[in-house]
View 1 (cartoon, one colour):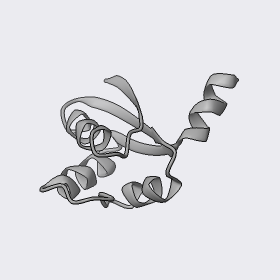
View 2 (cartoon, one colour; view 1 turned 120 degrees about the vertical axis):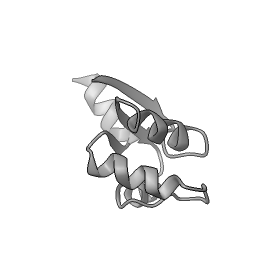
View 3 (cartoon, one colour; view 1 turned 30 degrees about the vertical axis):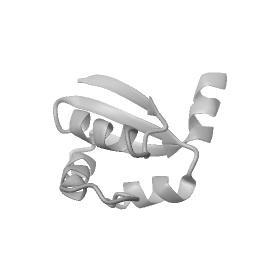
Length: 80
């Protein structure tokens, strides 16, 4: 399984794109500056209205093919 990293990953472009990839054979890690939105996404909810998005997101989270992380985690990963 190929891994994809999306910076700005829980916004209006990154989140739908990442969720589609996660439901089509990719492991997606989405980094974002908004910790509130990261938490919301990891609980299975879109932070905005996206028709059908919640179902795809929940499926990807259950299959462990999608994960949202605060951008600070990316910095710490790259620094080490």
